[in-house]
Image 1: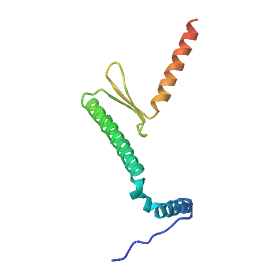
Image 2 (image 1 turned 90 degrees about the vertical axis):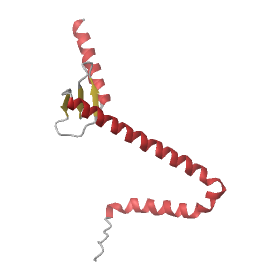
Image 3 (image 1 turned 60 degrees about the horizontal axis):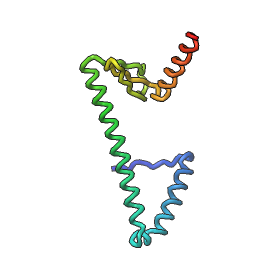
Length: 121
């Protein structure tokens, strides 16, 4: 069986340099792990686990919310085929999938409210 050919692209050079330098530092400091260097490693692994768990939970909750709304015909897909960046739940309990960040949507609604108030005055 023929082994796949490994091709290193010139744009990978900086990443490989950083990886090599980090590997050299790791190799030079492995003797410190038993003398207390294990503690920051445990903290880092714990933080990584927490962040991955949080991200996975948010993704699962969003999928469940989207699926429930789709079953009950309360889903409005405003992404036009783009990636969903925010899920907005309206006071009518409809769920809107948006390709715009939720912060941008709230800023636009605030600006719309300000312009309406200025028009009334």
